[in-house]
Image (cartoon, rainbow, N blue to C red):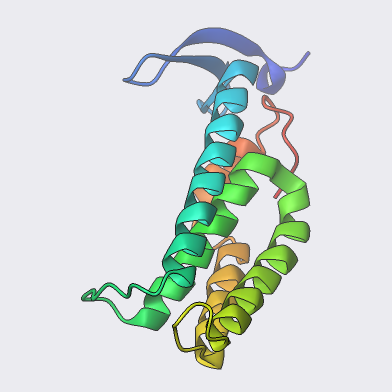
Length: 158
């Protein structure tokens, strides 16, 4: 095995995370257990965030915030895609964006009815789609993406 492929289990980082260290790159990556924890935590966070988004969108109570409504829509769906990609990996590249675009459209359709007591806006759904698209560009997290796709983790590439 070449030097660049040598792996050793060691105490990595200042916070004492046990993981693998690639000798040539000096990069320290969590082992299989660390990836399992990351994926599980991300899945739980995704489900919690989805419940929160649905609750906020489908209740008649509107909360006044200092941030533009469209920014909140985009940021919410951006976060959902990020958590989905961290939790489910490669399958989140296609399945989750399409599903979340449909969820966003369904939210706006439900808001158009008298059941919810909110106003539907096409621009809200467009903001959802923009948030999803930005999350798929990979410009926002090259470090995390490289860490997950490292040869030590044998994770699916993003």
